[in-house]
Image (cartoon, rainbow, N blue to C red; front, side, top):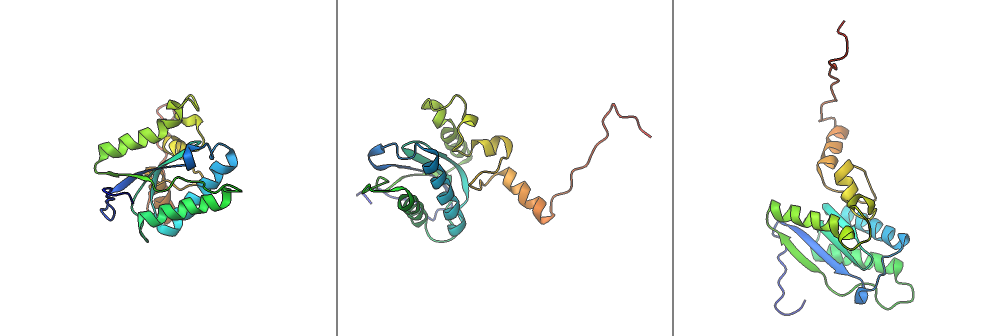
Length: 183
């Protein structure tokens, strides 16, 4: 770690993480490489007990909004994620990722929403798509529609699905519509 850089881990806070491909090369440009990243992120989520609140895969970098993992440290989880992708995608290249990563501790709800919006709007800002929902390689569609993707996103949609599966959520009640005749 560079001199003077302090990581505030084991704080119970969420983290906005950014890491880049080697020399910011567009190594995540094809569908296969983006899918490899998503599958690796889901593997790390399960292995480390990580809650993923949001993510976006860009052609040369990645943004994540995550909590501190239940098992091991955040640094170990990120290391495992980067190594998992690199081993599958490196081919004849010497490097896949830049060393290290940027880590911003989320201290309040305002920062959480700000970073999540930044993540979802990044492809639009870069001109990769017209609307956030057009970019397949992010968590936006999950938040907008509850759509399940390759990575489980920790959200109200996910919480409700778990409650239904456990039988703790009341079944939907059909209310009579005003146009329906009463018997």
